[in-house]
Image 1 (cartoon, one colour):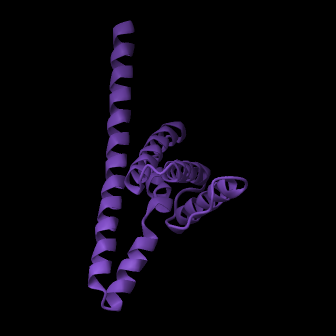
Image 2: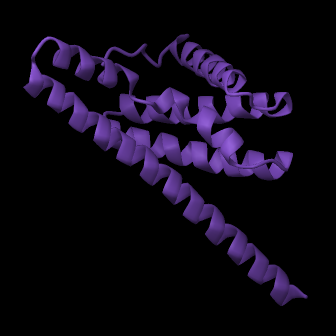
Image 3: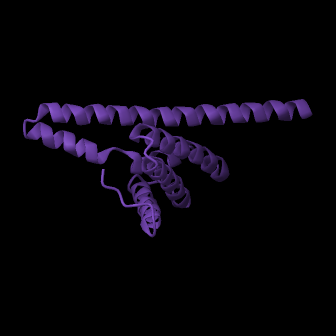
Length: 158
């Protein structure tokens, strides 16, 4: 995968473009205007997590899982802060993590009859989608446990 380096301006470019892409998708799906800045922040933090883990050579699946975990946790925080549903931040926030290039390569290779190569890309897509789903699941479990523990500590103090 040919990704900009994370040295110099590369990190800033990644942050800005993922922020713009997330906000643009939020506008496209009619996210309320007062949630767009939060959507951009959540999406760009998820993408930065992905980039840093990917460049540490820890694997694409772990990078996607970690990026989705950060998006899920960021969405939970933004939803509480803005008193809005979490899905308003989850859906646009995951846009930078979607495996678009692999999807394109799979369809391209199917179109030209290279079925084994296309199947390879389809397996990658399924694994990345599973990693993203697992990241969101872990974020949901972490936030539920946190608020359950916080609530039980608060009740014991009373």
